[in-house]
Amino acid sequence: MHTSSEARSANDQQCGILAEALTIYDERYETRGDLWRQADQPEDLIMHMRNKSLRATHIMRVLESGDLKPEAVDDHRAEAEDSLLDLINYAAFGLRWLRGN
Image 1 (tube, rainbow, N blue to C red):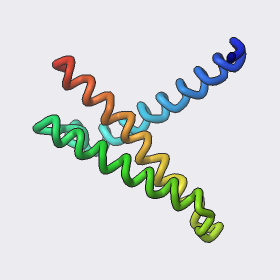
Image 2: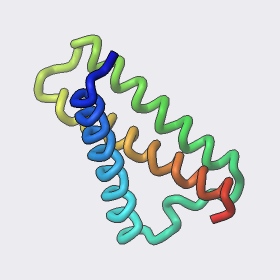
Image 3: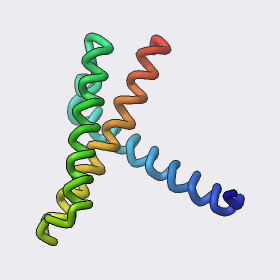
């Protein structure tokens, strides 16, 4: 069982990650406007989510394998993080679409 201190720590980490995703949303909204999140059909949104998920999964497997040169690890980790943070935003867009927003 988790202590309340462990739960608070996990919640703080979760809030930090969600704040990072929101920062990316804000940055991309500034550069691209609303175009980067628009999907004409729900299938388009799901396709983007699938692509981000597959990319992150592949990179995480490569990182886990230990086959990368040390100088390539940071770039790969950053790319996986970017894909995962985008995935959070796409999930939010899906919820907004479902709710008619």
